[in-house]
Image (cartoon, rainbow, N blue to C red):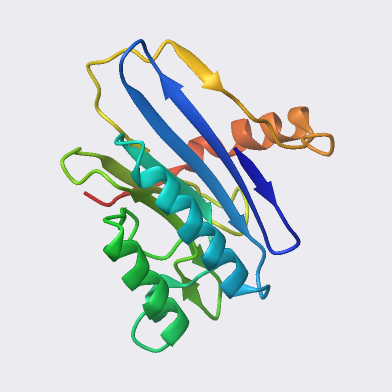
Length: 178
């Protein structure tokens, strides 16, 4: 399932073995674009996902600063929405730091509170946002991917990315959030 508008982009992948599955969603919301359209689409998708009865992970650049939960009513409403759906954000520290601001724009949500995860923010200037990820312990083998959607990578320069990655591996610092 994919969705792309002028306001946001989403990609969803279902990963499964013979009996279990995981839903993974990657989100990008363009900054300063229609927040309500994005929120409505995410609410609609969450309704559909709630019936799948499986762990769901949603991550990406939401361009919603969760550090402003007490000062911005839209952020507070978004946070209330995620809590109502039982979706919990695993990232709670800034993911974009500049000389004049610290913001939490990159989110990683899970709908399964019983799963113990290890969340990490990599303190690394590979872009203007720090990379985030989580490690999900599993005894199950997810061997095949039922559905896979790939975005447009025609402008991605693989060699330049790998060179940059290699140069920065020595200075990589990780911030453990657990």
